[in-house]
Length: 506
Image 1 (tube, rainbow, N blue to C red):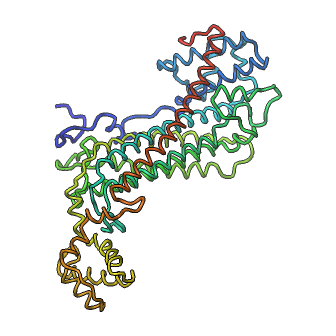
Image 2: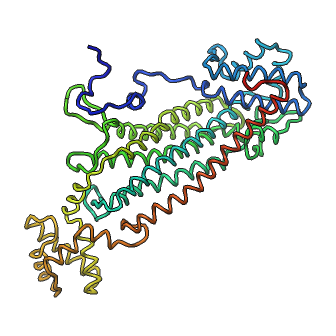
């Protein structure tokens, strides 16, 4: 008998491996060294730097050809898993340059580091790494929002109680609630776009922060690296190396807070006491002891990752304080923190998307819940104000009294006996029949009357869905244009390589 995990027979289908890995975290799997993630960016930056050196007459075309051929070789090895970082060489920059010098000789390869510092390299590598992650987060958010909109479209008429203070509050629809989850995620997209607008600037060419006596062309390297421009002050990106990481981390943490709210809401709504929704088996796990357990582990992990993100964000903020001008070694740790945050948080977007897509909605249970806890009382209050033209405060006191006396009779909604007793106590003379009282608290009728923009009525929710879909076209257009710019920059380097007789297939 082979046992891989201590639960699962209770499930109709088990979580796939990627979900198991998501739930397991680092329990049995290690993580890659941080600089392993930077190899492609260090190569890209080195190519751009070498081309610029040649164009400026600092190195010869023969030197450039040797350097680009060597970088292309490393690139191919890396893609096949054959370029493994040597710990004795300290970092990715030393590994790349060491390989080039050993393989192609110091006469040409040794010229690559002319007018460049490792400060240049790591600041550039991290900027390119984070920019790639920004595009990834935007695309993942777009897909998650689309899932919310699709599920909302399916539940336009699914009425449910809304909550305040964890208690029944007012009638709404499940679609309205889903859109309340989607709208902040749309803001998160623009938060990531804002990062791009602040930091899509080229730090390369600052050398160790104080410039160089070599005639560097920073416009050229900016073009070859798909940056909008270069940093106006060469010292800024070195002294404030923590700042792009912090801004990126803030965008991730805000997103994770939003996802944590969604997770907690669905955890509670899936409890037997609520039974409003049911998670698919693939997003649950069992117990090593209790055979009946079906735990919402995927959502609990998302909540945990949100907490981890907040802790990392505070670390990034702390690393940025009290820096003296120029490079300080403590800023190196921002790299580890931001990569930890990306590794922990980026997968949550895809997992949450699947949760929404596979979520089962118990519409009948939601409807029954709408007839409990006097959740229709506010709508009835508003109807009294409109129908009898009495002051709101007077009507509020009447309804509070009616709720009190109806509850004393064991009712879950305002009943005629409680209403009449309240009328007598408040000295009001209003005529409402038992049928009218029931109709005024009917959840479906209540929702249909909530026609204000942004509300839960069918037409209002349809307008929200249409509006969000239209707005998302703008962020998608921005993302496509940004990615096209990156690809164009890479193609320009390939064109230069080919002109020097270097095969891009090498």
